[in-house]
Length: 88
Figure: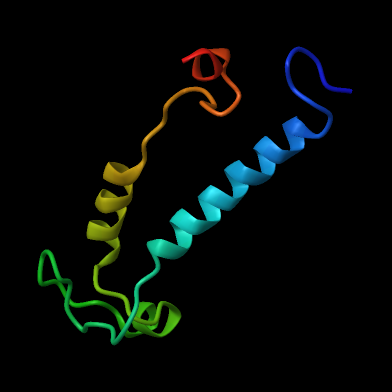
C-alpha cells in the first residue's frame, strides 16, 4: 500500500533503480584490457595471484584501497525518495 503522493509499487521501483545504479557504477569501475605487472600509481609489483584474480588490474592493493576511499560518496539519504527532491 502506497502512501502520500506515491502510487502502488513506487517504493519497489525506487529500490530497483538504486540497485541498478549501484550495479552500473560497479561495472564501470571494473578494469579492462591487459593487466600490468607493476602498479600504475606507485610502481610497486602486483602479485601474480592478484593479476590472475582480477584481469586487467592496474593498481596494487594499497593504491586500490585509497582510490576506493576517495570514490565513496555518501549523501546520507536517498534523493529519489526525499520530499525535497519532489518539491523542487
